[in-house]
Length: 562
Image (cartoon, rainbow, N blue to C red; front, top):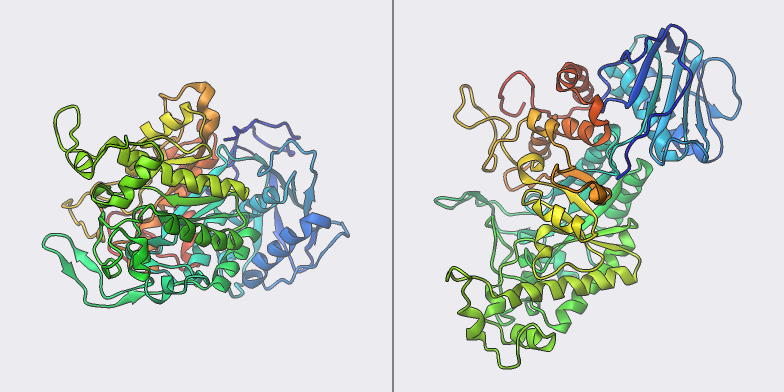
């Protein structure tokens, strides 16, 4: 985490200290002052940039061209009526911060790193009319107010997860989602690529993972009584698809964190390669039920090597520092009945040489209730530890959900704390980095209004209600966390689990505008957060989404998808 430090700058003529010139910027800038007048884009406007700033200049030109119809030249020649992009590695803006100053003569965006220039460009776009996001010329004046802004993020991890295993999402939608994240200064896309219900990433060494594992015969639509839609479902991304998405994200300073689930949520892989399971002679089908499914990877050497081969191809495709291995909701019943698992536990010293499978199955907790034997949690810890060491050998860092704390945390692991914040606090106390993802605040498969309320017409959600206001109020730094451990909290992200989101428009309805609230909470200093101001900014923010055909949830009470 990096806290924002207020930087000094020269005020514009006529500026009123602290006055917001453009209150509809989301996330709200850390420091903004209003000057007098405005700057108007014309066909004669130039984009001035050189060296490492040229890719951002080209992106700015491409952003502005469709709606304005102006093909603005990019080059090092300066002059009046220009948008200047300036990189200064010695600037005290941090790696993602920027300064933006506009007046009647033009705009200057300065930053220490290209990411800062990119975020300054996003602020510039938001200060223009919402039509700037359209993809055909709009006849109007393109003016933005005279302002001075200094801005930088509060947290370094600002993201969105997307589950494409329960319901496959087309590549074009994934790219659109990443673009929208970047527009709101979010910088992590957590791509949940495998689960019981589908394997979505091509692995050339193991083609059956997508030939078999990417397809299921139908999907659950209700739990009790169980009902299914009777429609086959599937799809996957080729490695060329993934390279295209990775390049798209990198140009927008978004890091992709791929998730390959293990040792649980593994049924799609086991259906493709039965030898990976704990009953290798039994042919299973790709999961069609939601929830926790009991079939998990076995702990034999061949399975460990198989998954490491998978990770080899994953690391080749995704250059970012993090690889997510899941680690959540791993039932231990198959291991408790597996001679091979018992042998492994004896080999690594989790149980005495005299232990039996019956000992594992008969275990009771301190209250005398049936429970998983501690050695079974230790076995999962051993499994995750093998992957942690393998990733570390390749210069990568393992991420897992907070169940990877059970049985002992792998040395290099980063924890996503979803069972509230207790797991994150524990991990930070042990010196591990944490991404706070408590389900009541960051799981966007939850309802947005209370079922049964007057006029309720919301799409299917899960369990609880997470309103826009609740998301906005969330602070990833728990009050219970000692100040000396706050640096281990990297930030937070939204979770979009797609059991009940069958289409891209379903995902957008559940994501937006709640992602706007989370984006502001992760970027803006706490002293600048103001839910009343955020509400006033929403009409303009939603106009921008509408111009991009985003199926956001309206603010004026519950509605069904548009």
